[in-house]
Image (tube, rainbow, N blue to C red):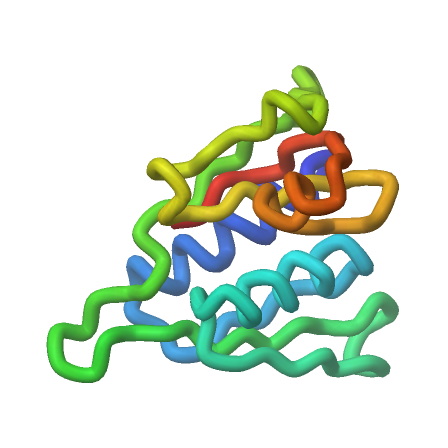
Length: 132
């Protein structure tokens, strides 16, 4: 597999479409940071890092749904920068997702952060994905 971040996003999307409560994903440092961001911004209910299960470990993510309507908190997850075409941005041209209602996850020199944090720290980087 060449694009592990696209696989991460696809597993979450497939879990949402199948109305699963929990999704298991192979772990990596980038995926762990992205999971922490999704939890901090309220897109997932909870997560757990399980080490020793496989060679690389596993991330168990509990998806978040509305209690009455059963609508997912994540409407869309879109991969932006791909292995064949990387998308970089500087600090002055950071993307705004749904006019600030969604988040863009970036890989910067300060780690994996959201577009809002990148604006505050005045850094740019590779735009990994949009979530809303």
